[in-house]
Length: 287
Image (cartoon, rainbow, N blue to C red; front, side, top):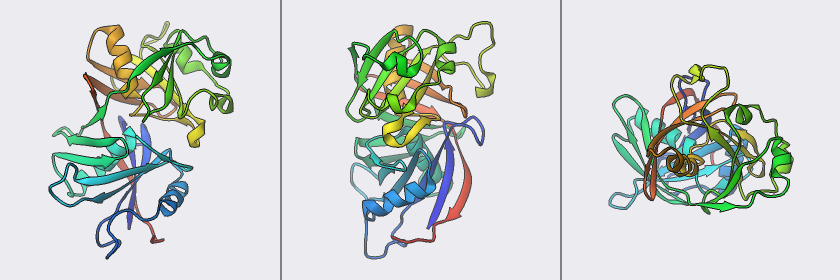
């Protein structure tokens, strides 16, 4: 079976967030349609050892979706993942398996990905709810920075969004990663409005941006995720309300860095970015 590693929400190879992608076709499992046992999928994801590995297989025609999609971190299955969905759509399109828009059936519902002529891909995801909550005791200490406000997100995300004072603070935090595991079902999203003191904006990301974020998921086996598409379904409504615009660009200021263009459309959020296949190999251990 072919397995690929794709840099998603990347402005060039070796940036953005790498994801494993395994496309399971009928030829891979004759007489056994669908996904293999979850234990095998989990072992593959642990072997790939990236923040997420996406597994897809085709569905019969005529339904609400074209492909089934599941995501695994090195330690667990997750309900929603943006960057690995972008990576999966990129692989299906670049190999000629699909063209235009592809629909995925996933744990969080039907998601779609549309490939544009310029090579960018737009994901259609559910918008996360945002519920203001009191800043939990200890979260500022765990982050090592003052927290202005906190928000709970929707069930399929399960993150705590925390607003910090400014972009420099978000970039500069060195959190106590194990301590962060106590504050959310999935992880912590630290964010602030764009604006660096005394410096030009990050031209390494090849563009302007409206807000920054960093994401930490110790409970998922991920200390810091390079670029988190699903987090932007919560960041888009937060910053759209603040900035008065529905179309924004977020920079996830990890060591690898990546841009996510967001378009808030009520109950849906569009996430647009680029992907690059950097490794194309063969998985030798069949399910």
